[in-house]
Length: 475
Image 1: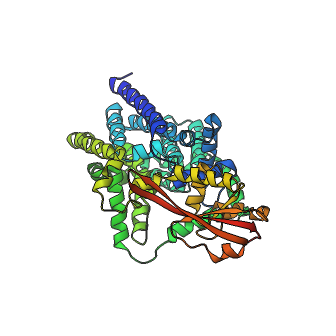
Image 2: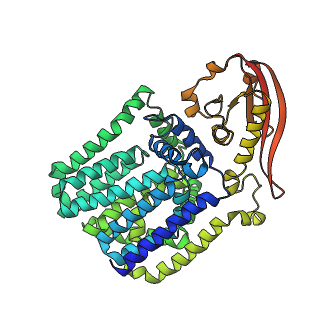
Image 3: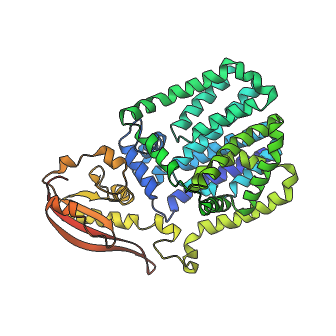
């Protein structure tokens, strides 16, 4: 094994150990999305309100290993990060050799994407893994010419579709790569690539049938996000680029853009090596940029584009810039792990500071558990799915958690409130929010209990209004 390959394995192993240790030591609670996906894992299905089911299956597998604890909810985040890194390294090595592969790995390691992917168990962790695995297997299929690799690629592609619909863009990228690479165009007349994608559709079919049963609810939700915003909005475009600037860290993002630009002509000329990472990166990044011109494009949407893009950024002529980029990335990551210490320098309100999203939920859960014991185990009702998801996890209230009003969510699909008639409810709302009239009319009596505040080091992080209602009559 070559020296740099040994270093890769050592760094990968140490990084994985660090992520698992940090999961155990972290001061941060589950994010609202993680708690929400955990509720999905308690009721496994072939689909959910807004997403395919992969994230729920993985969280369920993690909690089967150690119970409903935050560390096991997040367990597959570092595992999938490590597996993605393996595929990434060996794909890059197959394209350009071990030196470029090692540089690309180091470059990826020192971006903010790495701690985010290795720590948070959201839909992006399995998406990036299956995206990278599909590219690795596709590259092997072209290099070795064996049908088996096309079929394995199709299986990986299908599992990626079950992670997030964004995976479909990779299918278009692979087709464009074959189309614009003259030496590979004969594959468009062979059956193996089509059989591979047919296998992917077979993997995706059960979810599609679930969608058809529920009126294609997740498809419609995804389409609504894409349609959000219709007029030209340059500020949204700048915001999206700014988010990528921070996620990759500034110099790495510059190297990424430089890599795309320099390989554009090479790819159109049919360059075998640069073509695949170019098409796998550029199409998704272009789609995100176009979307951001007419409305919000969330920072995480472009994450899979950097699987190929970071390889293009690691070309040999960028040696000094690569070293400087890694140093800058290390600085940014150091800030990320010590984000709480930056609170004192922030002009944001305490509740709007980024880490506040990950704090205070455990305290709210303990308060809810105490109140439920005091008032005879009432069910939980609210209008905010983020609060309800956190209370379900930290308040140990699932499945007796129900949503009424607010943005639609999986709680609406589950329903079940009719089973609670005649019982009492603990209503959890955001601070100073008046009890909705629909709630008051649905109970014989409602009483304001308290405003509950979460204070850390003298700073109010979160606050909630709690109500107790009796004798539920139905909404």
